[in-house]
Length: 376
Image (cartoon, rainbow, N blue to C red; front, side, top):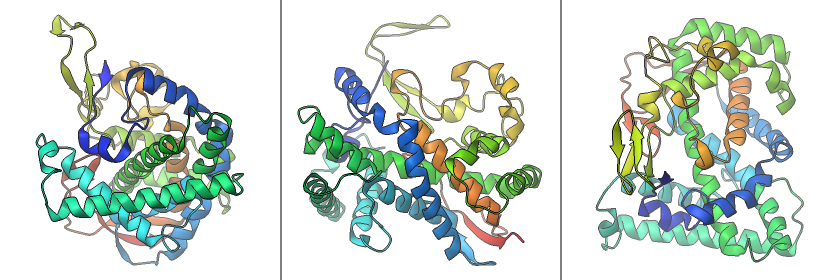
């Protein structure tokens, strides 16, 4: 099967890795694979850790924060640093706001069958989208030009892509660099923000796993800021993150087109059919995850994982369409757990109603206000 992408994503992302298909996708993936090599991710992990620690320093004991917004702004800040080496919180606020405008419109329109018609109407929202998209293009093309004429030896992904384009200008021109950067921005912050919001919610509601996590962090990190090399010591933290993405997968559904007739347990999916595959449903299949709504990180011991079929769990997709940035996402999520959970406990504001809101990612309809408690 191949993926199908809605027009609102295509009109902003162009022919990036998320929206391309077939041979174009395979060529792009092969070209971009070195960008997500372990060495590149390790170099960027230092940037991630500093941004997370800086964010933690802004929090105050006893304060109430809107955790959905906090995680969105934090992951956007991290993505700005790792993509462009730019501070979107202070140096490029206008660009950050343009990103927010584009993403808000895309979240809404991507779910509408009539979006192709709506985007042509002279609506204020469409005007805001076009202005924001134009501002993003100006910013990205300016950054590309600066890296081409100046030093491009930074570890950020834009510098890496520009270096690649100098080596293979036919394969990676400015337009292709722009498409990939916007693709990585969308995939690199929206999904992790959702995953982390739900992780803090689940830890707040389950004191047993939280106690185990804190014990591991205290023992492994000894008060130091973690590096990528420390993450191998945090086996329970990894299980917490895996279980959070099982209960509340950031990407909760994806679409595929059948390239040929497919037989699934005597049901024939005809060639050309459009099929929805839902991580949310399969991750809660009791055949593989008994008592599926219970948050239990122990499901992710090596033995338990090996006993289950591969595709009962796929938060990052699978096959040749599996997310190329999975290693990047795991590193970022683990560092956020290691740094923030080491310093803070989070508590959901008493009486707050939690209800799912499935958009591009799995959100919380009424937000996620949480009280911050500094760990002593």
